[in-house]
Length: 157
Image (tube, rainbow, N blue to C red; front, side, top):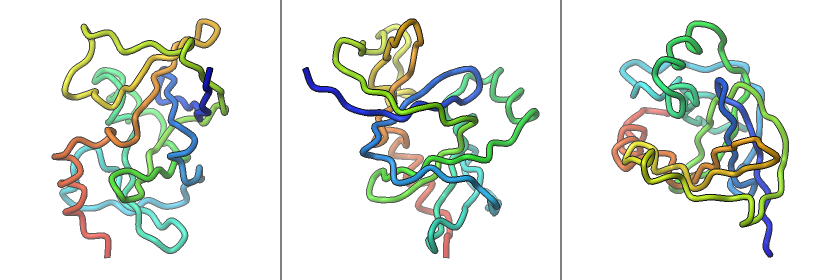
C-alpha cells in the first residue's frame, strides 16, 4: 500500500493537511503589505526570497463564518505555508504548523456528499488518525477559477 506524506496545521479549531510535495516552505511572516481593494480572502502580499507573493488568509478561506469573525478579532497568524498552485506561489496564513504525517489509503475517506459544495472542492479527503479528523486539501483546487483571476489582478510589481 502506498503512503504519502502531509504537513498538518491548524486554522482555528480545525486541523488541515497539505501534500508535502506541494509545499515550497514554511515561513515566519515578518511583514504583510495590505493591498487596496483586494479580494476578501487576500491578507496582502509579502516578500519571499526576493519575490512578491500573495498571502491568503487561511481563516477567511477555510473556516466557518462564525469562527472567522472571532479568529480575525483575536489573533493574527504569523506562520505561512508557501505552496505552488496553478503555476504560481501563494502563502497561506495558518495558526500553527503541527507535524509531518504519513497517510495511506486506509486512513482516508472521501468527503461526505452531504457537505460537499462548489465552495469547498479543495477538500480532497478526510483523514482519520487515531480519532483525529484531518481535512486533506488539494492545493490545485484551493483557489476557484474566479479567485485565481481575482488574484492575478493584484499588482505585485
